[in-house]
Image (cartoon, rainbow, N blue to C red; front, side):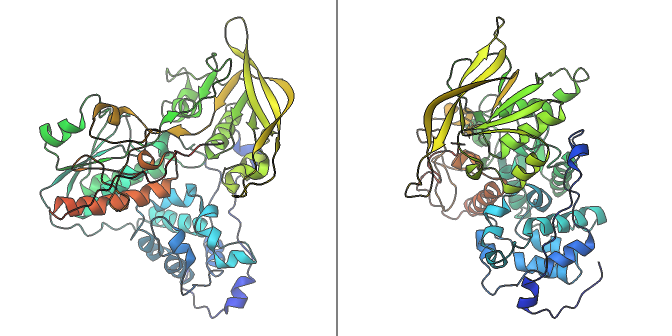
Length: 490
């Protein structure tokens, strides 16, 4: 991209057409797990960057959980310097290539974009991805300035977005960081919960390698709370502070007849077996998953879209069952659109009440009650109401995507870690410190199931407070739940 000099007025900028992200054709992309969006070209990125009005008080920055200088990095793309744009993003966001692909920009930064009041919002996420991909493919990533070693050691439990972000923030502050991961590879939900057609493994692996270059050490196949406890880390292993970033991996299931049948999975198990354990390559990898010809997916969030689209790629006919309508589906608009393009079946206003089994206890049919929506309540939400009308359809696999609860292992093995009745770890809202001295927490462990970028924002807050703690400054702890009830698809 050549440097540009533009003198467009705001009025002229608002009239420029939005640049859609190019996608691979639906009929061919469902045959493999290759990434679906192909990324902006230089010309597309320049054209989209020109739509930004560079507001004096940009609401988009405030809507970003990590506070990216959005007008600043877009201005650098407009000026023909995507490498500098990526560097600008990395001032506050350690995972720009990840966030450019999976963040719900339509509900955060782009939702408050001024351009979006009368037009399509600026493609902030697409531009972030463009800058991050340019940095990676052109080798312009720079090693950040790392402060002098403090002599302090920090243990981070979990290598998902919260753990990776905290590891980066604490390392550049001069602390020795060790990340403990229960699985055999780093990434957490980025690996097992997000399909490769949305987030290629190479993106995650490159970020992990970068952390390793900075001095972060990863210990795999280590379940903290089982092999070692928090007490072991703080006293036996000599760590000065610990951050819990274990996420929300405890699946919720429907309590209806047949829910324990063979062929019924949680979305976690289904996706983990396929993306982390290579079940789709059986018998090369001995972790088979039963993904039959007619797959019923319960729920309509982002994870449900991932399951539907994965089942399609495994040769099934997947159908989404959701008790509300299309308009209430909680999935990102982009993910819903991509699923619709791929010839997924939809059963809106359908509430499963039974999974019918055969003589060997394998699921063979799904029975649903048709629902209707009430008038909007004071929050604008429309409640699904039963109609008394039912229907039955064939299926040989059921995947429930109904949200997740917080991983209970660590709180169950340390009485000093306070949780609420839903198992969410309680922390100080300003510092993310738990009720146990020297132990902090971030991500889904303190909110219930949420987003990658929100987990990263909390990890940055926790890392800043941990640094204060490690250098001997007082850190407050009021122990409140940041987000009451863990998120669910309702």
